[in-house]
Image (tube, rainbow, N blue to C red; front, side, top):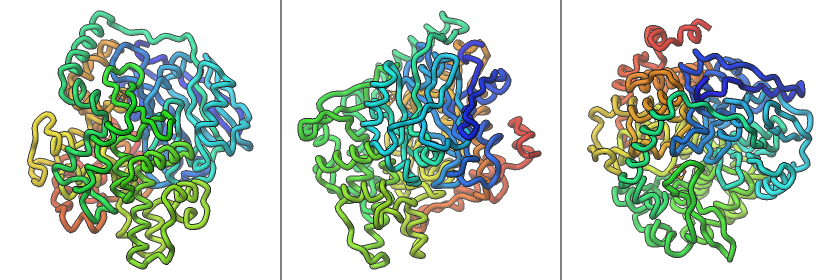
Length: 577
Ligand code: SF4
Protein backbone atom coordinates (compact mmCIF):
# COMPACT_ATOMS: atom_id res chain seq x y z
CA UNK A 1 0.00 0.00 0.00
CA UNK A 2 1.09 3.57 -0.61
CA UNK A 3 0.42 6.21 2.06
CA UNK A 4 -1.12 3.75 4.46
CA UNK A 5 0.95 1.16 6.31
CA UNK A 6 -1.81 -1.43 5.94
CA UNK A 7 -2.02 -2.67 9.53
CA UNK A 8 -3.87 -1.74 12.70
CA UNK A 9 -3.82 -3.00 16.27
CA UNK A 10 -6.59 -3.86 18.72
CA UNK A 11 -5.64 -3.50 22.38
CA UNK A 12 -8.07 -5.43 24.57
CA UNK A 13 -7.53 -4.19 28.12
CA UNK A 14 -10.05 -6.58 29.72
CA UNK A 15 -8.28 -9.61 28.29
CA UNK A 16 -4.82 -8.07 28.49
CA UNK A 17 -3.98 -8.96 24.89
CA UNK A 18 -3.20 -7.23 21.61
CA UNK A 19 -3.99 -8.39 18.09
CA UNK A 20 -2.57 -7.00 14.88
CA UNK A 21 -4.71 -7.03 11.76
CA UNK A 22 -4.56 -6.07 8.09
CA UNK A 23 -6.46 -3.02 6.84
CA UNK A 24 -8.73 -3.37 3.84
CA UNK A 25 -7.77 -1.05 1.01
CA UNK A 26 -11.41 -0.60 -0.05
CA UNK A 27 -12.25 0.75 3.43
CA UNK A 28 -9.22 3.05 3.55
CA UNK A 29 -10.08 4.34 0.10
CA UNK A 30 -13.65 5.12 1.16
CA UNK A 31 -12.92 6.59 4.63
CA UNK A 32 -9.24 7.70 4.20
CA UNK A 33 -8.05 7.66 7.84
CA UNK A 34 -8.31 9.84 10.97
CA UNK A 35 -11.88 10.96 11.55
CA UNK A 36 -13.32 8.85 8.70
CA UNK A 37 -11.81 5.58 9.89
CA UNK A 38 -12.62 6.61 13.46
CA UNK A 39 -16.38 6.89 12.90
CA UNK A 40 -16.45 3.69 10.85
CA UNK A 41 -14.69 1.68 13.57
CA UNK A 42 -16.78 3.28 16.33
CA UNK A 43 -20.04 2.59 14.50
CA UNK A 44 -19.11 -1.05 14.00
CA UNK A 45 -17.72 -1.69 17.49
CA UNK A 46 -19.68 0.39 19.98
CA UNK A 47 -23.03 -1.26 20.74
CA UNK A 48 -26.08 1.00 20.81
CA UNK A 49 -26.81 2.68 24.15
CA UNK A 50 -23.45 1.91 25.74
CA UNK A 51 -22.40 4.10 28.67
CA UNK A 52 -19.45 6.11 27.31
CA UNK A 53 -17.61 5.50 30.58
CA UNK A 54 -18.09 1.74 30.54
CA UNK A 55 -15.68 -0.89 29.27
CA UNK A 56 -17.87 -1.36 26.18
CA UNK A 57 -16.85 2.00 24.76
CA UNK A 58 -13.77 2.06 22.53
CA UNK A 59 -11.20 4.67 21.50
CA UNK A 60 -9.57 4.81 18.07
CA UNK A 61 -6.25 6.65 17.68
CA UNK A 62 -5.76 7.15 13.97
CA UNK A 63 -3.35 8.62 11.47
CA UNK A 64 -3.95 9.58 7.86
CA UNK A 65 -2.21 8.60 4.64
CA UNK A 66 -0.22 11.85 4.34
CA UNK A 67 1.22 11.68 7.88
CA UNK A 68 4.88 10.74 7.66
CA UNK A 69 5.27 12.18 4.14
CA UNK A 70 6.54 15.63 3.16
CA UNK A 71 3.02 17.13 3.01
CA UNK A 72 3.08 20.34 5.10
CA UNK A 73 0.69 20.97 8.00
CA UNK A 74 0.33 17.24 8.57
CA UNK A 75 1.62 17.02 12.17
CA UNK A 76 -1.70 15.93 13.65
CA UNK A 77 -3.36 12.81 15.11
CA UNK A 78 -7.05 12.04 15.67
CA UNK A 79 -8.85 10.15 18.44
CA UNK A 80 -12.51 9.06 18.07
CA UNK A 81 -15.02 7.60 20.51
CA UNK A 82 -18.47 8.03 22.05
CA UNK A 83 -18.52 11.14 24.25
CA UNK A 84 -19.47 11.07 27.95
CA UNK A 85 -20.50 14.72 27.57
CA UNK A 86 -22.78 14.49 24.51
CA UNK A 87 -23.56 10.77 24.28
CA UNK A 88 -22.74 11.01 20.58
CA UNK A 89 -19.82 10.36 18.26
CA UNK A 90 -16.81 12.65 18.43
CA UNK A 91 -13.27 12.99 17.24
CA UNK A 92 -10.60 15.23 18.68
CA UNK A 93 -7.31 16.28 17.12
CA UNK A 94 -3.88 16.83 18.66
CA UNK A 95 -0.78 18.55 17.29
CA UNK A 96 2.44 16.57 17.24
CA UNK A 97 4.29 13.63 15.74
CA UNK A 98 1.96 10.95 17.14
CA UNK A 99 0.68 9.81 13.74
CA UNK A 100 4.21 9.75 12.37
CA UNK A 101 5.46 7.64 15.30
CA UNK A 102 2.42 5.33 15.16
CA UNK A 103 3.06 4.67 11.47
CA UNK A 104 6.80 4.26 12.08
CA UNK A 105 5.80 1.45 14.47
CA UNK A 106 3.76 -0.17 11.70
CA UNK A 107 0.17 0.89 12.52
CA UNK A 108 -2.29 3.15 10.73
CA UNK A 109 -4.56 3.12 13.75
CA UNK A 110 -4.84 1.64 17.23
CA UNK A 111 -8.16 0.59 18.78
CA UNK A 112 -8.39 0.50 22.58
CA UNK A 113 -11.15 -1.74 23.99
CA UNK A 114 -12.27 -2.96 27.42
CA UNK A 115 -11.02 -1.89 30.83
CA UNK A 116 -7.79 -2.75 32.65
CA UNK A 117 -8.10 -4.07 36.21
CA UNK A 118 -5.29 -1.72 37.36
CA UNK A 119 -3.92 1.58 36.00
CA UNK A 120 -1.81 0.95 32.90
CA UNK A 121 0.15 2.62 30.14
CA UNK A 122 -0.21 1.42 26.56
CA UNK A 123 3.22 1.38 24.93
CA UNK A 124 3.30 1.31 21.12
CA UNK A 125 6.54 -0.19 19.75
CA UNK A 126 7.55 -1.33 16.30
CA UNK A 127 5.32 -4.28 15.42
CA UNK A 128 4.02 -4.72 18.97
CA UNK A 129 2.04 -3.04 21.71
CA UNK A 130 2.55 -3.63 25.40
CA UNK A 131 0.15 -3.04 28.28
CA UNK A 132 2.31 -1.97 31.23
CA UNK A 133 1.24 -1.39 34.83
CA UNK A 134 1.41 2.36 35.54
CA UNK A 135 2.97 4.01 38.57
CA UNK A 136 1.86 7.47 37.41
CA UNK A 137 -1.77 7.33 38.61
CA UNK A 138 -2.46 10.41 40.73
CA UNK A 139 0.20 12.54 39.03
CA UNK A 140 -0.62 15.62 37.00
CA UNK A 141 0.07 15.59 33.26
CA UNK A 142 3.38 17.45 33.52
CA UNK A 143 4.87 15.00 36.03
CA UNK A 144 3.44 12.01 34.13
CA UNK A 145 5.03 13.13 30.88
CA UNK A 146 8.38 13.79 32.58
CA UNK A 147 8.39 10.37 34.24
CA UNK A 148 7.38 8.47 31.10
CA UNK A 149 9.92 10.22 28.88
CA UNK A 150 12.58 9.38 31.46
CA UNK A 151 11.41 5.77 31.37
CA UNK A 152 10.91 5.24 27.62
CA UNK A 153 13.42 7.68 26.08
CA UNK A 154 12.60 8.85 22.54
CA UNK A 155 8.82 8.70 22.76
CA UNK A 156 5.64 10.73 22.64
CA UNK A 157 3.22 10.68 25.54
CA UNK A 158 -0.52 11.31 25.56
CA UNK A 159 -1.75 11.16 29.15
CA UNK A 160 -4.64 12.02 31.43
CA UNK A 161 -4.44 14.09 34.59
CA UNK A 162 -6.48 13.88 37.81
CA UNK A 163 -9.56 15.14 35.90
CA UNK A 164 -9.52 12.08 33.65
CA UNK A 165 -8.91 9.77 36.60
CA UNK A 166 -11.93 11.30 38.35
CA UNK A 167 -14.10 10.93 35.23
CA UNK A 168 -14.74 14.63 34.71
CA UNK A 169 -16.90 14.60 31.60
CA UNK A 170 -14.79 17.23 29.83
CA UNK A 171 -11.38 15.85 30.82
CA UNK A 172 -8.70 16.15 28.15
CA UNK A 173 -5.63 14.15 27.14
CA UNK A 174 -2.40 16.15 27.22
CA UNK A 175 0.80 15.57 25.26
CA UNK A 176 4.46 16.42 25.78
CA UNK A 177 4.62 19.73 23.90
CA UNK A 178 1.35 21.08 25.29
CA UNK A 179 -0.74 19.52 22.52
CA UNK A 180 -4.18 18.47 23.74
CA UNK A 181 -6.90 16.06 22.65
CA UNK A 182 -9.26 18.66 24.07
CA UNK A 183 -12.93 18.38 23.43
CA UNK A 184 -15.69 15.92 24.36
CA UNK A 185 -14.08 14.10 27.30
CA UNK A 186 -11.50 11.69 25.87
CA UNK A 187 -9.64 11.96 29.20
CA UNK A 188 -12.63 10.59 31.13
CA UNK A 189 -13.00 7.67 28.71
CA UNK A 190 -9.34 6.69 29.19
CA UNK A 191 -9.71 7.22 32.95
CA UNK A 192 -12.69 4.85 32.98
CA UNK A 193 -10.53 2.30 31.16
CA UNK A 194 -7.74 2.74 33.74
CA UNK A 195 -5.40 4.01 31.03
CA UNK A 196 -3.06 6.70 32.36
CA UNK A 197 -1.16 7.18 29.12
CA UNK A 198 -0.43 6.04 25.59
CA UNK A 199 3.27 6.07 24.80
CA UNK A 200 4.30 6.12 21.14
CA UNK A 201 7.91 5.07 20.56
CA UNK A 202 9.75 5.54 17.28
CA UNK A 203 10.10 2.63 14.86
CA UNK A 204 11.69 2.18 11.45
CA UNK A 205 8.67 1.62 9.19
CA UNK A 206 8.53 4.15 6.39
CA UNK A 207 5.56 5.48 4.48
CA UNK A 208 5.81 4.60 0.81
CA UNK A 209 4.74 7.34 -1.59
CA UNK A 210 3.28 6.32 -4.96
CA UNK A 211 4.57 9.23 -7.05
CA UNK A 212 7.35 11.24 -5.40
CA UNK A 213 7.76 13.62 -8.34
CA UNK A 214 4.06 14.47 -8.36
CA UNK A 215 4.13 14.94 -4.60
CA UNK A 216 7.11 17.34 -4.90
CA UNK A 217 5.04 19.44 -7.30
CA UNK A 218 2.02 19.50 -5.00
CA UNK A 219 4.11 20.27 -1.92
CA UNK A 220 5.98 23.05 -3.72
CA UNK A 221 2.64 24.57 -4.64
CA UNK A 222 1.36 24.20 -1.07
CA UNK A 223 4.47 25.86 0.38
CA UNK A 224 4.17 28.76 -2.06
CA UNK A 225 0.54 29.23 -1.19
CA UNK A 226 1.32 29.14 2.53
CA UNK A 227 3.96 31.83 2.11
CA UNK A 228 1.65 34.04 0.02
CA UNK A 229 -1.37 33.54 2.22
CA UNK A 230 -2.20 36.58 4.40
CA UNK A 231 -3.49 34.26 7.13
CA UNK A 232 -0.91 31.43 7.03
CA UNK A 233 2.09 33.36 5.77
CA UNK A 234 1.69 36.64 7.63
CA UNK A 235 -0.84 36.99 10.43
CA UNK A 236 -0.68 33.61 12.21
CA UNK A 237 3.15 33.40 12.22
CA UNK A 238 3.46 36.99 13.42
CA UNK A 239 0.68 37.23 16.00
CA UNK A 240 -0.47 33.66 16.72
CA UNK A 241 -4.13 32.74 17.13
CA UNK A 242 -4.65 35.54 19.67
CA UNK A 243 -4.87 37.92 16.69
CA UNK A 244 -8.43 36.65 16.26
CA UNK A 245 -9.45 38.50 19.42
CA UNK A 246 -9.50 41.96 17.85
CA UNK A 247 -10.87 40.83 14.46
CA UNK A 248 -13.80 38.95 15.97
CA UNK A 249 -14.38 41.71 18.53
CA UNK A 250 -14.41 44.32 15.76
CA UNK A 251 -17.38 42.47 14.25
CA UNK A 252 -19.01 42.44 17.71
CA UNK A 253 -18.99 38.65 17.56
CA UNK A 254 -16.99 37.98 20.72
CA UNK A 255 -19.44 37.17 23.52
CA UNK A 256 -18.76 37.56 27.24
CA UNK A 257 -20.22 36.35 30.55
CA UNK A 258 -22.07 33.31 29.29
CA UNK A 259 -23.19 35.03 26.08
CA UNK A 260 -25.01 37.71 28.10
CA UNK A 261 -22.74 40.53 26.95
CA UNK A 262 -20.16 41.42 24.33
CA UNK A 263 -16.43 41.56 25.00
CA UNK A 264 -16.09 45.01 23.43
CA UNK A 265 -14.09 46.68 26.21
CA UNK A 266 -11.79 43.74 26.89
CA UNK A 267 -9.29 44.10 24.04
CA UNK A 268 -6.99 46.40 26.05
CA UNK A 269 -6.90 43.97 28.95
CA UNK A 270 -6.72 40.49 27.44
CA UNK A 271 -6.56 41.03 23.66
CA UNK A 272 -3.87 39.81 21.29
CA UNK A 273 -1.78 43.01 21.42
CA UNK A 274 -1.28 43.02 25.17
CA UNK A 275 -0.78 39.22 25.19
CA UNK A 276 1.96 39.43 22.57
CA UNK A 277 3.61 42.48 24.09
CA UNK A 278 3.65 41.48 27.73
CA UNK A 279 3.80 37.69 27.82
CA UNK A 280 4.90 36.09 24.56
CA UNK A 281 8.59 35.15 24.50
CA UNK A 282 8.75 32.90 21.45
CA UNK A 283 6.85 30.87 18.90
CA UNK A 284 6.93 27.30 17.74
CA UNK A 285 5.35 25.04 15.18
CA UNK A 286 3.74 21.67 15.00
CA UNK A 287 5.74 18.95 13.25
CA UNK A 288 5.85 19.50 9.45
CA UNK A 289 4.45 23.03 9.55
CA UNK A 290 6.14 26.26 8.46
CA UNK A 291 3.44 28.49 10.01
CA UNK A 292 4.50 28.38 13.68
CA UNK A 293 1.33 29.83 15.20
CA UNK A 294 2.02 28.42 18.70
CA UNK A 295 3.30 30.69 21.45
CA UNK A 296 5.67 30.38 24.42
CA UNK A 297 4.84 32.74 27.27
CA UNK A 298 6.65 33.76 30.43
CA UNK A 299 4.86 33.86 33.77
CA UNK A 300 6.76 34.30 37.05
CA UNK A 301 10.02 33.47 35.32
CA UNK A 302 8.62 30.19 33.92
CA UNK A 303 8.41 29.57 30.18
CA UNK A 304 5.27 27.62 29.29
CA UNK A 305 3.01 27.02 26.30
CA UNK A 306 0.69 30.01 25.97
CA UNK A 307 -3.08 29.77 25.66
CA UNK A 308 -4.65 29.82 22.21
CA UNK A 309 -7.34 32.34 21.29
CA UNK A 310 -10.18 29.98 22.25
CA UNK A 311 -8.77 29.50 25.75
CA UNK A 312 -8.14 33.23 26.20
CA UNK A 313 -11.78 33.80 25.32
CA UNK A 314 -13.17 30.91 27.40
CA UNK A 315 -11.34 31.88 30.59
CA UNK A 316 -11.02 35.63 30.01
CA UNK A 317 -14.25 36.81 28.37
CA UNK A 318 -16.61 34.04 29.40
CA UNK A 319 -15.45 33.76 33.03
CA UNK A 320 -14.59 37.42 33.62
CA UNK A 321 -10.86 36.94 34.22
CA UNK A 322 -9.37 40.23 33.02
CA UNK A 323 -5.86 39.75 34.37
CA UNK A 324 -3.84 38.06 31.61
CA UNK A 325 -1.24 36.71 34.03
CA UNK A 326 -3.95 34.96 36.03
CA UNK A 327 -5.69 33.80 32.86
CA UNK A 328 -2.47 32.13 31.70
CA UNK A 329 -2.13 30.49 35.12
CA UNK A 330 -5.68 29.10 34.90
CA UNK A 331 -4.97 27.78 31.40
CA UNK A 332 -1.77 26.14 32.61
CA UNK A 333 -3.54 24.56 35.58
CA UNK A 334 -6.26 23.17 33.27
CA UNK A 335 -3.46 21.62 31.18
CA UNK A 336 -1.73 20.12 34.19
CA UNK A 337 -4.90 18.67 35.70
CA UNK A 338 -6.26 17.65 32.28
CA UNK A 339 -9.35 19.78 31.61
CA UNK A 340 -10.66 21.08 28.28
CA UNK A 341 -10.44 24.88 28.59
CA UNK A 342 -13.39 25.70 26.30
CA UNK A 343 -15.79 23.48 28.23
CA UNK A 344 -14.25 24.59 31.54
CA UNK A 345 -14.99 28.23 30.61
CA UNK A 346 -18.53 27.35 29.51
CA UNK A 347 -19.27 25.46 32.72
CA UNK A 348 -17.92 28.22 34.98
CA UNK A 349 -19.76 30.96 33.03
CA UNK A 350 -23.00 29.00 33.40
CA UNK A 351 -22.34 28.52 37.14
CA UNK A 352 -21.61 32.24 37.68
CA UNK A 353 -24.83 33.26 35.90
CA UNK A 354 -26.90 30.81 37.93
CA UNK A 355 -25.35 32.11 41.17
CA UNK A 356 -26.05 35.71 40.11
CA UNK A 357 -29.66 34.80 39.33
CA UNK A 358 -30.06 33.15 42.73
CA UNK A 359 -30.68 29.70 41.20
CA UNK A 360 -27.59 28.28 42.88
CA UNK A 361 -27.12 29.38 46.47
CA UNK A 362 -23.33 29.16 46.64
CA UNK A 363 -20.62 31.76 46.51
CA UNK A 364 -18.30 31.56 43.51
CA UNK A 365 -14.82 30.37 44.59
CA UNK A 366 -11.66 31.78 43.02
CA UNK A 367 -11.30 30.40 39.51
CA UNK A 368 -7.92 28.80 40.25
CA UNK A 369 -9.58 26.89 43.10
CA UNK A 370 -12.42 25.92 40.77
CA UNK A 371 -9.98 24.18 38.42
CA UNK A 372 -8.91 21.92 41.28
CA UNK A 373 -12.41 21.47 42.69
CA UNK A 374 -13.62 20.21 39.31
CA UNK A 375 -10.59 18.03 38.57
CA UNK A 376 -10.83 16.34 41.98
CA UNK A 377 -14.65 16.57 42.15
CA UNK A 378 -14.59 18.48 45.44
CA UNK A 379 -17.61 20.44 46.73
CA UNK A 380 -19.58 22.15 43.96
CA UNK A 381 -16.81 20.96 41.60
CA UNK A 382 -18.39 17.50 41.66
CA UNK A 383 -21.56 18.84 40.03
CA UNK A 384 -19.67 21.13 37.65
CA UNK A 385 -17.58 18.16 36.51
CA UNK A 386 -20.72 16.86 34.79
CA UNK A 387 -20.62 19.69 32.21
CA UNK A 388 -22.86 22.74 31.87
CA UNK A 389 -25.96 20.98 30.48
CA UNK A 390 -26.19 18.35 33.22
CA UNK A 391 -25.29 20.97 35.84
CA UNK A 392 -27.97 23.47 34.73
CA UNK A 393 -30.53 20.71 34.22
CA UNK A 394 -30.06 19.49 37.78
CA UNK A 395 -31.44 22.90 38.87
CA UNK A 396 -34.19 22.90 36.22
CA UNK A 397 -32.37 25.73 34.44
CA UNK A 398 -31.16 24.15 31.19
CA UNK A 399 -31.48 27.44 29.30
CA UNK A 400 -28.38 28.84 31.03
CA UNK A 401 -26.11 26.18 29.56
CA UNK A 402 -24.64 27.66 26.38
CA UNK A 403 -24.15 24.43 24.49
CA UNK A 404 -25.22 22.39 21.52
CA UNK A 405 -25.85 18.65 22.03
CA UNK A 406 -24.20 19.04 25.45
CA UNK A 407 -20.88 20.47 24.23
CA UNK A 408 -20.12 24.01 25.40
CA UNK A 409 -20.05 26.66 22.64
CA UNK A 410 -16.72 28.24 21.65
CA UNK A 411 -15.77 31.90 21.13
CA UNK A 412 -17.83 33.06 18.16
CA UNK A 413 -21.27 34.51 18.91
CA UNK A 414 -23.76 32.67 16.67
CA UNK A 415 -26.15 35.64 16.85
CA UNK A 416 -23.63 37.63 14.81
CA UNK A 417 -22.97 35.02 12.11
CA UNK A 418 -25.89 32.96 10.83
CA UNK A 419 -23.75 30.39 9.03
CA UNK A 420 -21.73 29.75 12.18
CA UNK A 421 -25.00 29.41 14.12
CA UNK A 422 -26.19 26.72 11.70
CA UNK A 423 -22.80 25.01 11.91
CA UNK A 424 -22.94 24.94 15.75
CA UNK A 425 -26.43 23.45 15.62
CA UNK A 426 -25.80 20.77 12.99
CA UNK A 427 -22.38 19.70 14.26
CA UNK A 428 -22.48 16.00 15.07
CA UNK A 429 -20.09 16.41 18.00
CA UNK A 430 -21.99 19.38 19.47
CA UNK A 431 -21.04 23.05 19.91
CA UNK A 432 -17.87 23.24 17.86
CA UNK A 433 -16.42 25.89 15.54
CA UNK A 434 -14.27 23.43 13.63
CA UNK A 435 -16.92 21.26 11.99
CA UNK A 436 -17.52 24.13 9.57
CA UNK A 437 -15.44 27.24 10.22
CA UNK A 438 -17.94 29.72 8.80
CA UNK A 439 -16.04 32.45 10.64
CA UNK A 440 -13.63 32.37 7.68
CA UNK A 441 -16.31 33.61 5.27
CA UNK A 442 -18.47 35.56 7.66
CA UNK A 443 -15.86 37.41 9.73
CA UNK A 444 -12.35 36.96 8.34
CA UNK A 445 -13.35 37.45 4.71
CA UNK A 446 -11.59 34.27 3.53
CA UNK A 447 -11.87 33.78 0.60
CA UNK A 448 -14.35 36.71 0.46
CA UNK A 449 -16.48 38.42 3.06
CA UNK A 450 -20.14 37.46 2.91
CA UNK A 451 -23.14 38.95 4.71
CA UNK A 452 -22.88 37.33 8.12
CA UNK A 453 -26.39 38.35 9.19
CA UNK A 454 -28.10 36.87 6.15
CA UNK A 455 -29.39 33.30 6.09
CA UNK A 456 -29.46 33.22 2.30
CA UNK A 457 -27.39 30.37 0.87
CA UNK A 458 -25.94 29.49 4.27
CA UNK A 459 -27.33 25.93 4.30
CA UNK A 460 -25.40 24.93 1.17
CA UNK A 461 -22.26 26.72 2.27
CA UNK A 462 -22.28 25.08 5.70
CA UNK A 463 -22.80 21.67 4.12
CA UNK A 464 -19.84 22.13 1.75
CA UNK A 465 -17.62 23.33 4.62
CA UNK A 466 -18.69 20.37 6.77
CA UNK A 467 -17.88 17.90 4.00
CA UNK A 468 -14.48 19.45 3.25
CA UNK A 469 -13.63 19.59 6.95
CA UNK A 470 -14.51 15.93 7.45
CA UNK A 471 -12.21 15.06 4.55
CA UNK A 472 -9.28 17.16 5.86
CA UNK A 473 -9.71 15.61 9.34
CA UNK A 474 -9.55 12.21 7.66
CA UNK A 475 -6.33 13.09 5.84
CA UNK A 476 -5.28 14.24 9.33
CA UNK A 477 -4.06 17.70 8.43
CA UNK A 478 -4.25 21.00 10.30
CA UNK A 479 -7.60 22.71 9.84
CA UNK A 480 -5.88 26.09 9.44
CA UNK A 481 -4.71 24.76 6.07
CA UNK A 482 -8.29 25.30 4.86
CA UNK A 483 -7.73 29.05 5.15
CA UNK A 484 -5.67 28.69 1.97
CA UNK A 485 -6.13 25.29 0.30
CA UNK A 486 -9.23 24.25 -1.62
CA UNK A 487 -10.55 20.71 -2.11
CA UNK A 488 -8.44 20.18 -5.22
CA UNK A 489 -5.16 20.72 -3.35
CA UNK A 490 -6.02 17.99 -0.84
CA UNK A 491 -7.18 15.66 -3.62
CA UNK A 492 -3.92 16.13 -5.55
CA UNK A 493 -1.77 15.51 -2.47
CA UNK A 494 -3.73 12.38 -1.60
CA UNK A 495 -3.56 11.05 -5.16
CA UNK A 496 0.22 11.54 -5.32
CA UNK A 497 0.72 9.79 -1.98
CA UNK A 498 -1.66 6.85 -2.45
CA UNK A 499 -1.72 6.34 -6.23
CA UNK A 500 -5.52 6.41 -6.09
CA UNK A 501 -7.13 9.08 -8.22
CA UNK A 502 -9.08 11.57 -6.09
CA UNK A 503 -10.72 14.70 -7.48
CA UNK A 504 -12.69 17.65 -6.16
CA UNK A 505 -15.95 15.66 -6.27
CA UNK A 506 -14.42 12.80 -4.28
CA UNK A 507 -13.47 15.19 -1.49
CA UNK A 508 -17.09 16.29 -1.14
CA UNK A 509 -18.48 12.77 -1.55
CA UNK A 510 -16.16 11.19 1.03
CA UNK A 511 -16.70 14.09 3.44
CA UNK A 512 -20.45 13.68 3.00
CA UNK A 513 -20.18 9.93 3.63
CA UNK A 514 -18.32 10.54 6.90
CA UNK A 515 -20.76 13.25 7.96
CA UNK A 516 -23.75 10.97 7.32
CA UNK A 517 -22.22 8.04 9.19
CA UNK A 518 -21.59 10.32 12.18
CA UNK A 519 -25.21 11.41 11.98
CA UNK A 520 -26.35 7.77 11.83
CA UNK A 521 -24.28 6.98 14.93
CA UNK A 522 -26.04 9.78 16.81
CA UNK A 523 -29.48 8.77 15.55
CA UNK A 524 -28.81 5.22 16.75
CA UNK A 525 -28.05 6.75 20.18
CA UNK A 526 -31.37 8.63 20.14
CA UNK A 527 -29.82 12.03 19.43
CA UNK A 528 -32.38 13.43 16.99
CA UNK A 529 -32.59 17.00 15.72
CA UNK A 530 -30.40 20.07 16.00
CA UNK A 531 -30.84 23.09 18.22
CA UNK A 532 -29.23 25.97 20.09
CA UNK A 533 -29.81 27.57 23.51
CA UNK A 534 -32.97 29.68 23.95
CA UNK A 535 -30.89 32.85 24.32
CA UNK A 536 -29.46 32.30 20.86
CA UNK A 537 -32.75 31.26 19.27
CA UNK A 538 -34.28 34.63 20.16
CA UNK A 539 -32.08 36.08 17.40
CA UNK A 540 -31.18 33.21 15.06
CA UNK A 541 -33.91 31.92 12.66
CA UNK A 542 -32.61 28.38 12.98
CA UNK A 543 -35.76 26.56 11.84
CA UNK A 544 -35.67 28.21 8.42
CA UNK A 545 -31.99 27.43 7.94
CA UNK A 546 -32.47 23.84 9.13
CA UNK A 547 -35.24 23.27 6.58
CA UNK A 548 -32.90 24.26 3.74
CA UNK A 549 -30.02 22.34 5.27
CA UNK A 550 -31.92 19.05 5.72
CA UNK A 551 -33.17 19.29 2.18
CA UNK A 552 -29.68 19.97 0.81
CA UNK A 553 -28.36 16.99 2.77
CA UNK A 554 -31.10 14.63 1.61
CA UNK A 555 -32.38 14.16 5.16
CA UNK A 556 -35.94 14.07 6.47
CA UNK A 557 -37.54 16.84 8.56
CA UNK A 558 -36.05 15.41 11.78
CA UNK A 559 -32.52 15.60 10.45
CA UNK A 560 -32.23 11.86 9.73
CA UNK A 561 -30.58 10.71 6.48
CA UNK A 562 -33.03 9.26 3.95
CA UNK A 563 -32.44 5.74 2.66
CA UNK A 564 -31.69 6.96 -0.86
CA UNK A 565 -29.05 9.35 0.50
CA UNK A 566 -27.34 6.55 2.39
CA UNK A 567 -27.49 4.32 -0.66
CA UNK A 568 -25.87 7.01 -2.82
CA UNK A 569 -23.07 7.31 -0.26
CA UNK A 570 -22.43 3.57 -0.09
CA UNK A 571 -23.68 3.36 3.50
CA UNK A 572 -26.33 0.68 2.82
CA UNK A 573 -24.86 -1.79 5.29
CA UNK A 574 -25.20 0.71 8.14
CA UNK A 575 -28.88 1.46 7.73
CA UNK A 576 -29.70 -2.22 7.19
CA UNK A 577 -28.11 -2.89 10.57
S1 SF4 B 1 -0.88 26.25 11.54
FE1 SF4 B 1 -0.41 26.27 13.72
S2 SF4 B 1 -1.76 24.65 14.57
FE2 SF4 B 1 -1.66 24.32 12.36
S3 SF4 B 1 -0.01 22.84 12.06
FE3 SF4 B 1 0.87 24.90 11.83
S4 SF4 B 1 1.68 25.45 13.84
FE4 SF4 B 1 0.25 23.72 14.12
